[in-house]
Image 1 (cartoon, rainbow, N blue to C red):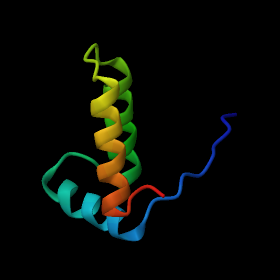
Image 2: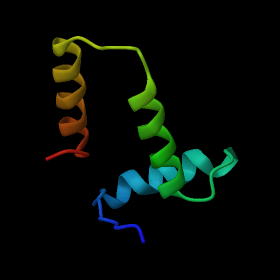
Image 3: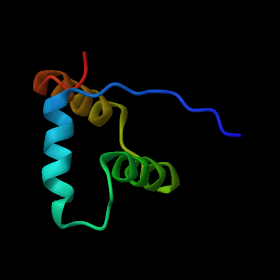
Length: 66
């Protein structure tokens, strides 16, 4: 048996994802998010610390991260 946890996302963000995946082969936001996370974890691409800070600040500015 697998254990699960819950991740909270802003409703606006989920709505954006739902709109984005309408034409994509994902059955749910959960499937899409899992795909993106696994793809990122398997990626050999690295970003600089400065870029990571810029991305984090942008997500905070958009209200996706507190």
